[in-house]
Length: 307
Image (tube, rainbow, N blue to C red):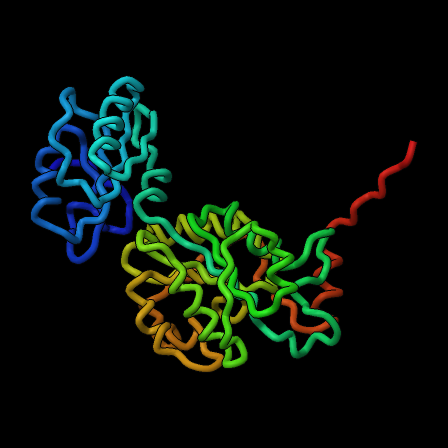
């Protein structure tokens, strides 16, 4: 069914086992529509280089359609037909296949910021509200997730002060069971993920040195590495959050209890995880000493001079 081969985790028409996305050239669109009709588990179709005539696209109702072509008039024609049919459609004006954008569109990843901890080792106020370069710590983390390319960003919280610090900058999920441990917060975040989300990136709310470049690097690695359902940043101890977890692992995550997390699912199963070098640092803040050390890594803002 065509000769276009894109690095989209192997989930193209060449390997359609289970839920999958499909990438085809325009000349193969009729065959792709036949495939979609036969396979209800085909979630998304990307068409690169549109044909002259718009075919009957009703088989794509309920699917996601991505159109790529250098001709804006042809893009508009196809998009209008798709929209009238009630098809979810996105289009990219490009004469060449934009590999990274295609992969991102076909394999969306959601970000889950865990921000429901009790800060038991940090005396005083909630540590996630501590000032880092003039911004509450937790906001550094959620901005890294959203600016790094996560299609949906969810913050799981337990205290109203954290909710106020987010101030509408991300989706909020309240975890009434936060005192039971990390597992309940991660599960609350997973339940909030939209149906089209293929994987979730879990990041801790007390990791202000995880920047958008770290997130973007891990997303690219996960989309290119089709054989492993998890991707994490390398650390001195092997790997550390953020960690990206494919939907196929979510069942194991929902079975966790207490203070368990992704590490308990991946421990001893090296075949499941790809550890990649990434910019930024995964340091988390647990104690006042941790906070003092990390604050020194941020440049101090110069005070404004009054006229």
